[in-house]
Image 1 (cartoon, one colour):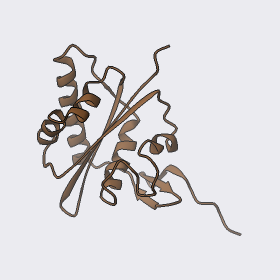
Image 2: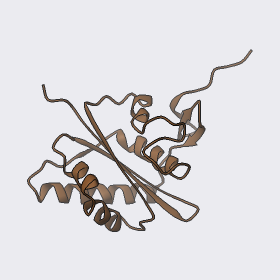
Image 3: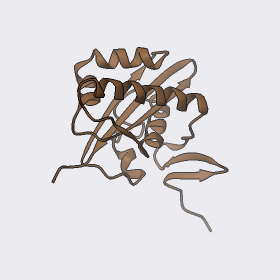
Length: 160
């Protein structure tokens, strides 16, 4: 008798793993140093937003999705996931509902300050950071083979 392949985020021995049938298993746990880097980016994002009279973004379950996306970038540096699906399918896998969504990615920047400077000097990335449509943020950072990868995921609800 055979079992079924796990899908989505699963906790095994205290570690989070993202199971995807097409790409296999990827550890999605966040180390203390990765979390500190991600938290600093969120702090910088909210400084940019509040200095312009915008509401700060709230950190939520997007952190797990962003951590997994950062690890995926080491396989395929693109807004398309390694299995060929769009970046936002990870939100579906995690059961995260949203009306609006955005993603910023970066590679090579060694500090939160440098990556935020690069994003703020790019009109598309800056638009995501300063969008009034977004209420929540998750940031992922990982270092793979000496290369830093960064992801910002944003979501917001539709205003009814």
